[in-house]
Amino acid sequence: MLTIGMDKDELFSLIKKAVREVIQEEMGKVWLEGLPSVSDQEQADINRRFGKPDRTEILDPALRELPFKLEL
Image (cartoon, rainbow, N blue to C red):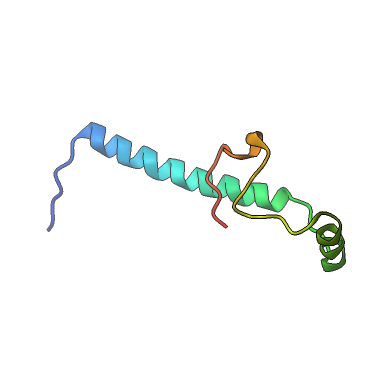
């Protein structure tokens, strides 16, 4: 049997990090589910009026850092 030596603090940190990552992932899913959907026609109208957004640039500073990690 394989035994791994790890002290209590290291184990606690590892578990805490893993739980944090899972919570961030789930919060991201909940946040995305809460966004209203738009039809293809509505999106085309938005793009025509305002141009297609650049996904690499977020102008609103409040949106630059979300309280969770969002993977698209």
